[in-house]
Amino acid sequence: MKLRDLLSVYDKKKFYASAVKNEKLSRKEWEEIMGTTRDTYRRVGGRLRRRK
Image 1: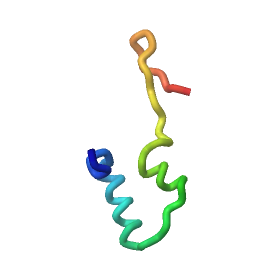
Image 2: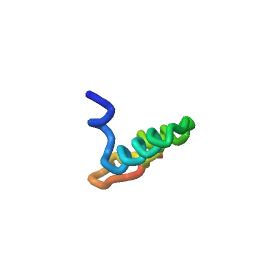
Image 3: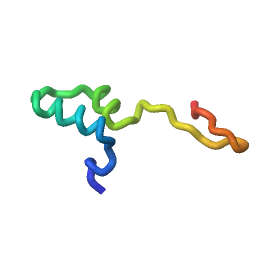
């Protein structure tokens, strides 16, 4: 599976905009693009709860 298959349209636009500017992205910016800083949820007793 390719990286382009995993990213949303919004994230692709952000990525290509930074590539056109030819700027170096920090690790924090890469994590934001890849979505690792998003909240994760799990099902507990039929309800969705945010994972800590």
